[in-house]
Amino acid sequence: MARDLLPIRGAPASPYTRKMLAVLRYRRIPYRFIQEVGEEELPEPKVGLIPVIYFRDSTGALEPTVDSTPVIRKLEEEYPGRSIIPGDPVVAFLNYLLEDYGDEWLTKAMFHYRWYYQDDIDMAGSILPFYRAGVNQSDETINNLNKVFAERQISRLYVVGSNNVTASVIEDSYRNFLSGLNEHLKTMPFLLGTRPSSADFACYGQLTQLTQFDPTPSRVAIREFPRVHAWVSKTEDLSGWGKGEFLTADNLPGTITTLLKEIGRTYVPVMLANARAIDQGLDKVETVVEGKTWEQVPFPYQAKCLQWLRIEFSKLSVEEQDSVMGILNGTGCESLLQKPE
Ligand SMILES: N[C@@H](CCC(=O)N[C@@H](CS)C(=O)NCC(=O)O)C(=O)O
Image (cartoon, rainbow, N blue to C red; front, side, top):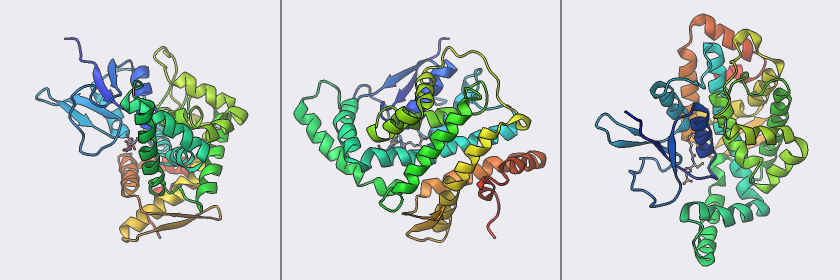
């Protein structure tokens, strides 16, 4: 029997939507992309996030599912071939970590740049409302939506930890990541080898916006890292990419260590401080990222992400865990997996 087109609801300006669309294209999973409100009657997910992927449950009903990381694993089970999870369990763990960094840290830069500087606010505010409402809306309707939407998003900058204290940490980390990825791409076309992994798609999703939509961070990429800009465009549609291998734990290049060090410098202290604040019921996360203060309200979802990462680690054999720790040792990432003193 021919399979249904997999419904995915989302928006072009949503980095996680872009992540999933690129996954579906590379994996050659036939889909239909639903962009507009009311385009098709579909059930709403419990958590109001996009993208929403609709799997069929055992009764044949469409079940709304959110959260790209587990959705990717479910797709691996349901659709064989062209896997984006490396076969070596140690490399698969690094892939999980890099994917979470893309999803949970790079997104801070994405949301920060979009709603912090006036040029970026103006661009996103004037274009994004068309995506959901339709390009045939009147200017008046769009202008009203622009105002309401921009105000709502600006008022939510605190959720990702973007504020006047953290702005320079976020912006330095964006540049450092681009620089690390740029060096890495000189040696191979994807993060973990000559075929793409879910970590590539996570970083790609955020970078579609950072390097190619929002003017302030795009300027950085265009002027200083054109290679990364090109990588983003190419990664959008890898349906024709038919070759390649994943790295194995014994042939990781030094450029991966450099990227892990950048993750260890930023994502790691913030994820740990956030989890601690949630454990202790504090109303503020406070930590230091390379001598600079980080302050934000606790983010319960990111504490769960850390738990999930630790669960992935616990699934490895003792030898595999040792191998992961050997790779992470000295990068700062090892403390994610160590018991606090
Ligand atoms: N962890 C989720 C995050 C999805 C997410 O945060 N989506 C954003 C848009 S990119 C969203 O729907 N935000 C709520 C809103 O815009 O109302 C995933 O990986 O899919």
